[in-house]
Length: 294
Ligand code: C5P
Image 1 (cartoon, helix red, strand yellow):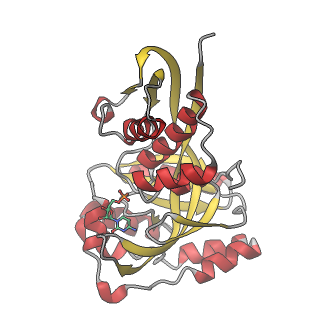
Image 2 (cartoon, rainbow, N blue to C red):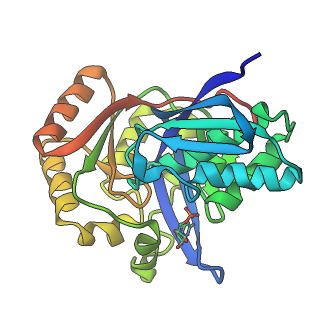
């Protein structure tokens, strides 16, 4: 029987992110409220001749052995200690690359889940989370999905109640590229620990849409913004225009993607239209809850 199936790989936003301290291993301790959204890539798994994993991406720049999907496959093969049957993975890329939306991490998480199934490895959730953390700080959250408070370098997760439904408008500046490492390394160390994500966590625990929107409206929800905004005039100007128009854009991860939560579809559509006028890429999606208990 020919084996073929697809899996979705969902993007994430950081509803809040606080850098707490630099670490000796080059990472930073943080606290972040992470939320899965409906914007997704798709991975197609197909039977292939030969052994091991053959990986292709619709965005040619992302094909090859350095992609986290290939690296996930290599780790699983190494753990198995034997040649595993041939599989071809095609990644249909849709999530913007290097935008702070964890697109690459989401692909890695979907690859781990898909290959665990394809190769019948029977690895449990804890093992997949540990392998995910080896691939990148956001991969465990992408395996987890839903809403979570992330600690450590992002890999220690505490499940939070599902967020009430919001439409999400993503604004991605066209000509801004910011590496995660440079964002972490260039922020003002005296700002460590601010803003505390505690009010956000409490608002989520109360299930209060109003308080979650108030958190986003405070304008400073992510420590990394202080490091990233000065690096990009484009990002700064899009943020200012959106604020002037009455929206509350917040930076996701190390950016440059910003997100706006909206109460209803009409407001989301208005925000999306406005973002388009600003010459940024716009994605209209919604928050999603993880389907799996971890
Ligand atoms: O874990 P990931 O590969 O996504 O991290 C990319 C880079 O971002 C790291 O090499 C590090 O420089 C920086 N980083 C950090 N602290 C974190 C996560 C990432 O300094 N918690």
